[in-house]
Image (cartoon, rainbow, N blue to C red):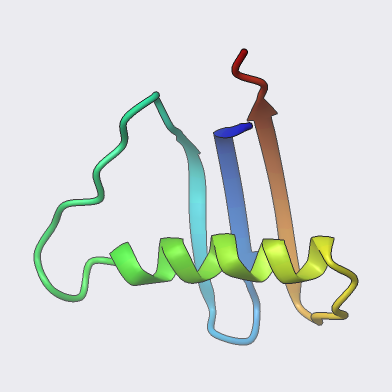
Length: 68
């Protein structure tokens, strides 16, 4: 299963990721401080929520694609 689209917002850090699409190979490339690690942290936070952890101030929308 791959992430197809994601939108994420964290009120505690006042950071949000506008809707972003992923392809079969997605590289996060950019200068220091542009948000690459924030994107990864957002995905990790959604993973923790999916496992039952309670996290306040987070809004998200994620779409998966099944790969056969």
